[in-house]
Image 1: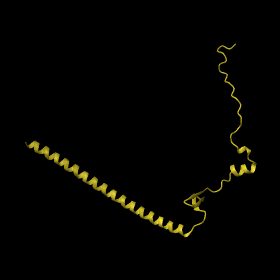
Image 2 (image 1 turned 45 degrees about the vertical axis):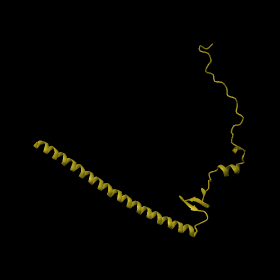
Image 3 (image 1 turned 30 degrees about the horizontal axis):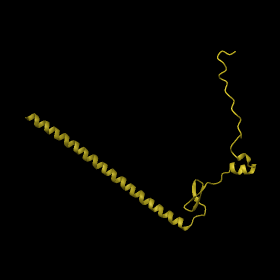
Image 4 (image 1 turned 60 degrees about the vertical axis):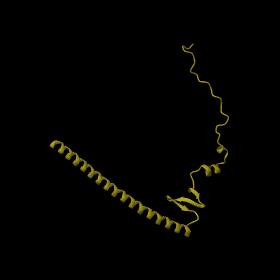
Length: 126
């Protein structure tokens, strides 16, 4: 006769109907190798009607390059270059404006200090 009773004995769970809900165990060996094997193939995607595949770290057109691609690529590179130059110019302008602002702030502080000294000097004379 146990002292505290047998309150720690867990109840048995009912048996499961199926070992797995997946239907992959129903496939034959060759289909399973194709579906779940180590050969994934190259990743592909379709963007705006153009099929692309991933090779050697870059997305490449499956249909090969056509003249429209090359012209579009050159146009985009030229636009990218223009935007980079514009960005550099704007950064330069911001730097110049910050320099001008710091210079005028320093001058303003000096003038305020001078004014305070003059006020104190005139108060001493009175």
